[in-house]
Structures are given as structure tokens and as C-alpha cells.
Length: 232
Image 1 (cartoon, one colour):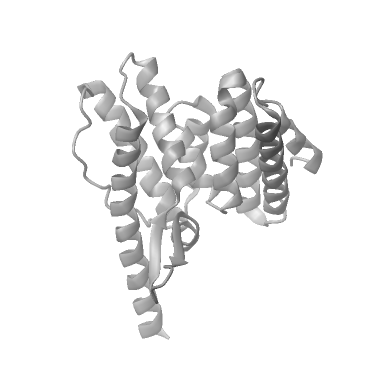
Image 2: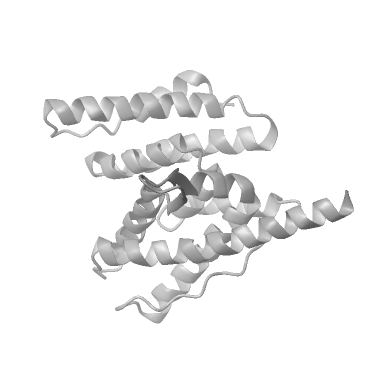
């Protein structure tokens, strides 16, 4: 089991070129992430083991990115701080990281019950060839399965609710760091394939995927609550 001190490794990928204000902001992000990860250690059973493995996967992933991993670090840290499930973050990283890919396969195999959602259909992204589309399809399937593995926590953390100013209504927003992280990971994968698509296009693509996924997740959890109420 990972000791609390191991989380100091998250200080490794600090950016080399920041002004003082950016450095201060970056250090604050790291402090919040360390606190969030230490909190995750307090969880019990397999969930705790998964969170420890997530920490090791992230450390290894970022160490491979060098100075260029700063954006990934900041986005991952914000996802962790929002209590987004370990499985979901690992599923996103799995597109470009072997350790994450192997881990998400193990996690989903260990799932005791099948809560799989229908994989969201999407319009093909311009310039994707057949092989790339097949990889992206599998990636989205893994993300969807990971989301269904912990449906209530996924909804609570990824679907951010707030009260609109000057209006008495609840506004829902898909977590911007989670969408941005997914778009950056996809851009990185495509760049390795010598396919270049701007991040705004990929962000819109991922937001559309997550919008449909969360809609299905809400419907699934409503169905579970109706069944539990009927059985009780």
C-alpha cells in the first residue's frame, strides 16, 4: 500500500517557465491535490486500492511527459479534487498510457455486476481513419463502462450543479477540467498518429459524448431508485 509520503512525488513535473504568480498558483494546485489524494487513502477495500494505483499511474505518466506534463498535471489534480472516480480518470488516461490501459481492464473485469451503459453514438471526427476510429470507439466504451461502475459518484462529481444568478433554478455543467483533460489526451494520441485537430474541436466532441453519457446515467440511476422503492 502506498504511504502518504509517496504523494510528494507529484511535485516532480513542476513547470520550468512560470512567472511568480503562476508558480504560486501551481504550488497551490499541488497542495490541494496532495490533500485530496491523502483523503482518498482513507477509503476502504478495493476502492482504496484503486486510488493508490491511480496515484502511482499518474506519477509514472507525468514523469514520462517531462515539463510538457504540467497541463496534464493541473487538469488531473482538478479532477481528483472534484472527487471524480479513480476508474474514470484511469479510463481517460488509458488512450495514451499502457499502465492505465491495463489497469482499467482489470478494474472492469473485477466489477461484480454489469451496469454497462449504451455507448454514446457520435459523428465521426474529421480526418480520423478507420484504425483511429476503432481505437477511439474502444476508449469511449471503457470510459462509459467506468462511469457506470460508480454511477452515483460519477454524476455527483462530473455533473456540476449550481444556482443561476438572478434566477431560481439549478444549472448543470459538465466538469470543465474533465472535458479538457479528455480533449488533451485525445489530441496527444492523434498527434502521435500525425493527425492534428484543434483542441476546441476535440473539447466539443468530448462534451457531446459526456452529455449523452450522463443523460443515460441519470436515467439508469432513476430506474434503480424506482426499483429499490418498489422492492422496499
